[in-house]
Image 1 (cartoon, each protein chain N blue to C red):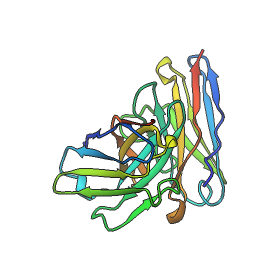
Image 2: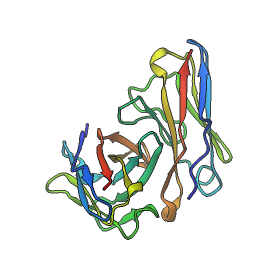
Image 3: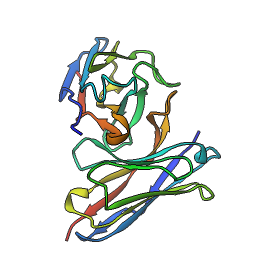
Length: 111
Length: 120
């Protein structure tokens, strides 16, 4: 199972919006509404920011939102803040044979 | 909320074995699927394995099939990963994670991770 495709980096100024794409296939992203997004600060464990494509867990700021169109999912951070600088990973369920597949990760830089 | 603490990592020679543990706090451990995810130094996250609530169903990434075995002891609130025939490319931080989200198809929460280094 190939990894999902994410841009290696995106950047924005405080207050701006950035969007991270996550492209897969009809066997993973396009086939299931089970895309999740994780934030990881250096040396820390990942933290879920979005699950089931669009759902924001309790405690996650509402400036984080998720969406999906076809085989591509997206994470948007609106009103970028300094603490949002981190690596972000998408993940999709890919069926009982391949189970779960992650994207390669995107480094978000706040300018 | 469940908290997860991994242990058992360390330095092992190629071809060797290691058993990782993940201790869960709270009373809901036995109600959730559990996962192992790894991250090689400077690299991305890779799903490794999962197990259902009573241990009767397990799944593995191709890289783990035939070498790794996931198991759980619900009486001890502990998840395990037995790793045999270890290779240099298995060097990574190994995280345990609870199945989370509304559908249970995400990972929440994660443990802090335990580092496995395979080297001679």
